[in-house]
Length: 288
Length: 288
DNA sequence: GACGCATATTTGTCTGACTATATCAATCGG
DNA sequence: CCGATTGATATAGTCAGACAAATATGCGTC
Image (tube, rainbow over all chains, first blue to last red; front, side, top):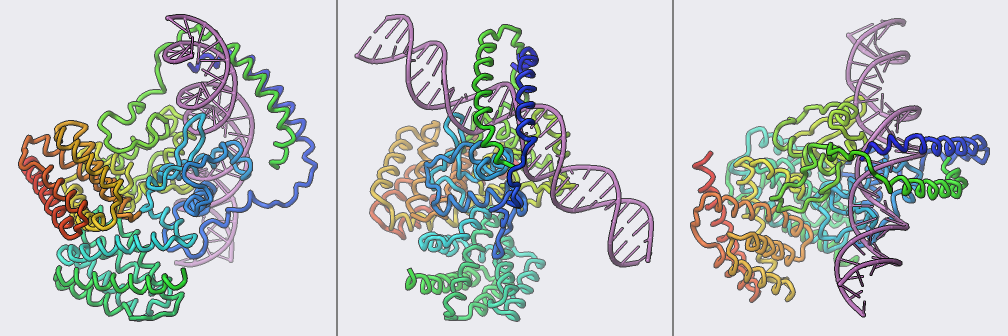
């Protein structure tokens, strides 16, 4: 089916040539204000400052576009079932090539957020089909203030998994992981959660804990947990409600894990998370 | 520099029309040996028969390639840190265009499995960076027999989340969800797990249960749970070890949820999963 | 030895054309 | 009058070849 191309080659070539000529002719007088519209524009801001999640395709054009579209979809600009403008129009109006646009769409499609079919277009899928546990999607989610329900759901998940994970970690942690957690804990104690370094250490603590379960599937939830964790501190910071210092709780969890006491680890972690949830909910309800 | 497009728009459209006419004209006599070199070739087998997971980009070239590469990476053909041949060589040796190859790579990259940088190439990332909870990745995982540890991990996750989910579902399920679960249960009872329909109903049951928690994050784990579920039946089928009929367990869970008894739901579900894990482990250990 | 610079290699982007596919309408046969 | 077949059409998918940007590497200079 490719060989007919050879047949029609000559004829088509004539067209091509003609078209080229015409094209070039018009091109030759670009004249018009080549105003300094600068680079393509817009979305190049790309990964803003406060991304606590790994931003995969930082500076790349397709990555930035996927980011933007993703945020727009999650933010409700495009609703489920909506059909995006076709590739040609979209890429033209964004002033990027069709390839770059398509690669962006591929990224979104691979996260289950859109679905493309010939003659139909690219449609936003049902919300329950997106992989909201995907680190990138989670990151996009937090670009715009996520709904209260979503945050609660995240904490519920955390409340379910993290105590169990702590128990497993108590049984399976390696000495190396113990050291990493100890170090993270020390940083937290020194810097407090008010500093960026302290918050990073907090994340590192929970992250290492999840990996200490030596359970791949569970470890994959680390990002999700991390999102909830950093959301806690963000809320707390915002409302200056210090409530209760969570660091001693962390220390208790750590000690339990260090001495291999699974049930204590589970219990302490549960109390820690419950506290965090309480704090977050307290700051959440009055303002909504 | 894009504004010329607007100017040439009309002219181009004329060409397009004319071209189409010509095209159609030639099309009408396809004549020549449409020799059966067939499709491009090779990987088009694409999504084989036994995919119990939604296969996103079925017939598409980039999708098929992403699938293949994904399976190869998960199967250890490419190890973490390996660098794939450059885009030009790869696409040439696969006999596809660079665009298609790149789109496939974008898919993998968006799942955290590879990472591309200029002058370096595309390298396979560390295993703990892949999103193994991604439905597609999970599907690829099961193309080749996954490791015993992985299966165990999956069950551990199931053991942690599903009882809690059952408890939440008991409190929050809608009547519609009750009906769906009832129907699924009826099918299971009628067809047993030996039939495809029965297995589908099993999946539907667990799927609906997860969604009945009305927790987005938890619901996203439905695919993961589903993978573990269908893995159970696969093992059981393989070894003909009927052990114990799981359907009454399902019925108990359902009844608890129907009457809104959270703690009973949790308990029944835990016993159900524990049973499944036991069965699976029993069939697993002797053969490895 | 350290630093800056050129270079080569690889991904990233662009352009324009052609192919495949699926919806929709119209047509034809029953 | 209805159903199936066909054709038209719009859209994503694939292709080819070029150029741009980025960056690790090695060289040369200080």
